[in-house]
Length: 632
Ligand code: ATP
Ligand code: MG
Image 1: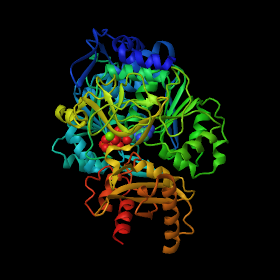
Image 2: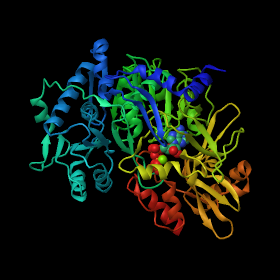
Image 3: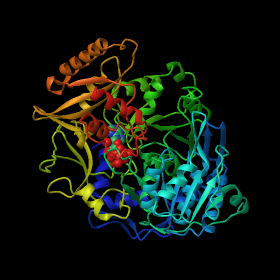
Image 4: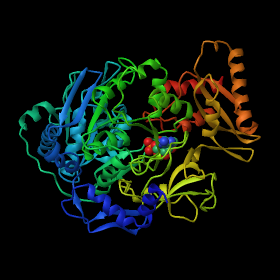
């Protein structure tokens, strides 16, 4: 057995010993008495009896050895700010923020909602909550008042921390009016709002409710606020899923399990080392931002870069310039961002010294082969490592764990099941496990879910059980709602979401397979395929594509010609059954604010239905384009 295979097997078959060892990577005030309590499935309790603190492990613990090393590197190309906080500085700032929260009556178990742009104060806020044992709920700064209001109601925070404005492309985006409106809309009202005033957008504070961060901070320059030791199972935060498939779910995370899971992932998955630098380009509003902008790198004693700005401003080399300047070792981004960079001058990839960079990790959506190849070649063959995971899991389910044993990547595959995850492919109709190579099934995880995964849905145990554990017949397993196959080497390939399967005249086809095929046409930059109801065949595929070169597509004849070419590609690669009934050319595709295709909404409008909950959609014009095309 290879090293990784052995490591993985031990994590499943000798679970408590395995995780007991990993638990040594973090500091405990009180050692756990029991590693895993799974007496009430599917609810798992990790490191029972243990007491710890997330902020202690991310900050205080490092003071002895690396107080003067960089911890948080804040870079904003929006406001032209750049500031490095050492662990000592971070420790002081977090205590100041914690002191303000304490003044406002925040105690262990209280919720604090954070609605902030990517500024250092947002990191202080998250860590300060963790320090006090308060449960934070970060809401992505791009959400408007309706989405924000539903989250305020669900989390019922005592305090909200916000800022006057975010900034995008050099223009201020006011947050305060959206926040005020959201509080108005919400049945729950916070007692106080802490406002970080960046002086980007003037606002009127609400008397008696709003407090000014700078004023309060000045009163607490020497604040000493000790960490509140909490039970391992104490919730650290709640965070909503992206809402790609419907109403967002409030994922609830514990403290001890999450700390251990992240601490273990830094060496085993990311090959990060204390004193190194981690650069994750996500946003704190997403799970990737929680785990790998804030907590993971800091727990691992690494500096973390928090970047506010676009990937292409001042130019498409900005991220690589940061890699050079801060000697980034580990970089983490999303395929959608790489596709943006792909449209820029390729010379920007070779302009900077990237010798410090060990690997680039990508997660959040399928990594298509052309994008993977482009970035891999551009970075001179450095490992490009696909991570497959979910908000629910908090850290990767599938990837290559090079820190355990070096293994090659395969294009199109996120890799193998990560240690701790007892991944099973099952038949969705019978619940039967599929053990053969290249059999297509639903990717499920046998309980207990490993440390760091969701404990439940906030305030709704029943929804947790019903949503995730009751969808596979005859089995209590966690469903990811993604289709996958596993090849003879144990590498998984994600084929799309279970609700993205279309049934054409009895043939079950993954929309992702059809998209891959269409993407291989040289003039297709991006494409979404959905199933549309059809009287004859049950369903047919319909495609919405963005052409790379639109100059020749000015008239209907040219568009028809390209449409025909695309259909031929699908015919030859997958067969005529998968051929889309139509291929429409659009300038943009509707996505969630985290960059995921909203196939659910596309499908609804393609069938002339109401698209439903669109609160997490980024660009309404993109969906309107499809409405018009389908009608026309
Ligand atoms: P919701 O659950 O509210 O519908 P969502 O599933 O989009 O939203 P996330 O938790 O942000 O919310 O996304 C997880 C999903 O993203 C996975 O289930 C999978 O479908 C997709 N995904 C993530 N990483 C990858 C990857 N590396 N390859 C393919 N798909 C991925
Ligand atoms: Mg999901």
